[in-house]
Image (cartoon, rainbow, N blue to C red; front, side):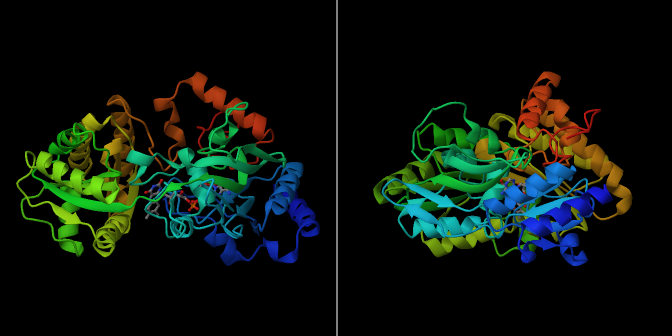
Length: 466
Ligand SMILES: Cc1cc2nc3c(=O)[nH]c(=O)nc-3n(C[C@H](O)[C@H](O)[C@H](O)COP(=O)(O)OP(=O)(O)OC[C@H]3O[C@@H](n4cnc5c(N)ncnc54)[C@H](O)[C@@H]3O)c2cc1C
């Protein structure tokens, strides 16, 4: 492949301005990893795209020479999506920002894929508007990465994941063809929904070069409730009690007992003695509706907890809590030399069963497994923490058994982190051979030469494991 890469880089040096193609070792090294344990191979070059025309040039040259291309946003992915598994080129999209073009009256925003997620929130909220996706990495991750992963977050329970907030996309396919899919209007059903197909395709079908986002009015009032519970098994019951009131909280999060133990020792949050789980509810709406809902929810929860419910109405208080929640992943990371964060989903009623399984696996394999996450969606981040390299086989066994348990409990392998490189070997646990083959054919249509993000999603087979 070396000769092919050389020829491809010569073609790119002719097609692109000088500052786009970077081959320095430190730049290549820093683009060979993401926020997962995935080990890939060193890219030969990083192409720092500034616009769709650069992306067209890269994919055209890479296609002509059969060179793999790994699209990349901020590299915060958890499954190795932005890690080049077969070397080649990393296509860095984080400089494709431009202005955030907000149409207030029609409730849309047009953005480049390199815009940082929180910048979208800040810009639209300044106009009294709201965009749903709120991954906890929002201070770093990019809209392009959110689209590729169909990212979710605490608000997904009420507002859905990224796919629900994207109306249209400008994309460049693996063949280097630039096209607009979807629409700018709020409704529209013309043809196949290629926008929804590209959202969540993990950079394997096309590179996103621009997105039209759907916006709604920003809610007038928000209140966050911290509900300490005596046992994890109470979590789904307490959620049932809230939903029975026909109140739909925008966030329904939980932390298990092992996570609370870590927070007790290592955070500014005061965890009451005896609390074995934390349920976090966030309500939004008009001032009046939120005040009424707060009272009704508080009353309903009194059957499930004797701890005092913490209530944060002021933005600064809410932010104090959410900064602890957003730092949770890194706080756990500091507890051990190695950490893997999984994100399996089960039907909500099965959350206690899933946590029981985690306890069994933790004991059987001698690995700490604190879990927390988006309880309303049944989506748990099960963390595997370990300190000795010799524990790695036990970690791998526990991970495989965790996936099998999630499927057995009626769940799915990933709620938001995607399949990437790390879960590709497990795809067949959840999807039939026919479903996998149908997806391979879609991949062939968008990327007939198989150059876009090889080694992701699909388990390796005689097809080349694209
Ligand atoms: C502390 C922490 C907390 C997190 N919390 C959440 C959470 O709450 N919810 C959640 O969903 N995720 C979460 N994540 C995972 C991660 O942040 C998200 O998946 C995010 O959407 C990735 O964005 P990124 O810009 O970093 O993308 P990258 O990691 O760079 O790439 C991710 C994937 O997107 C593809 N890609 C990137 N840009 C493009 C593009 N322009 N066109 C096509 N494909 C592209 C890449 O090829 C790769 O497959 C968290 C991660 C961390 C480290």
